[in-house]
Image (cartoon, rainbow, N blue to C red; front, side):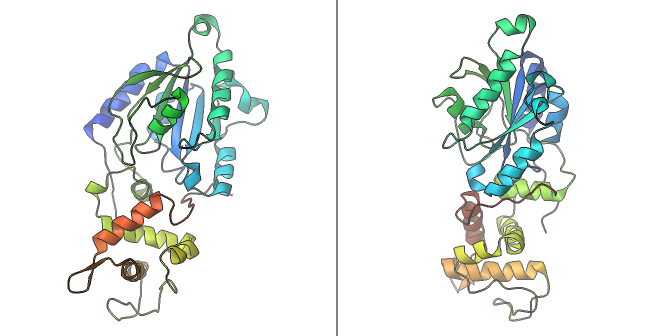
Length: 307
């Protein structure tokens, strides 16, 4: 198992300071999270930085995640109920399901922002509403901003670290938005958080052992979405404890052995073969991660709210 994944480049410390220095200037915060990992993609230091500011959680990349999970997370992440959840003065949290690539969720998001703007009092009510957008790397912030501004304002990409610095942008409705680079935190207390972030591309593949990360993903998908995995890679069956490993010929005894055996099967189906009929685990690993991230395996949610 991959342990102790931690990735905290120097610019993330600067991003934390940027948020701290500008939070008093804004009326509300939009926190963008990845719908596939709503727990792991919520940076715990943002709670301390945002404090009592009204907050909207954009559950982004919803098209890559399970529909039912999206609905449950929206309910879970909205604080209060009834009027309390809608009261922009309460400093509470609202959640909206987003697909920034198609624009789904944009209208409800703007409606929430208008309520926050209307609830302002004093001198701030005379100025354009100011917002800050925050989130982990590769959560889709830039694509969402482009939707909100109505034109391509920021660079986008399928890798972390595309947004580099502070940017003030004007939205279609005249509100002002401060974009910030993706920010992680110095240490993941739960090792599964680092692994989930790595699965979804929030941590650079270049610092990871890709075949091992792919094997970890196979373990998860074998347990939670076995049919999607089997169908995508045209496997007759997924191998498990007691089956013979196609690589060693010995019985499979552990989850790691099973993941390796299934990766071997998948590589053969996809033609990931090196000279001498050796399996190209590096190529197969990258292929698997790319297809998971693009939802080619299926719409998958790795973290569900507790019942």
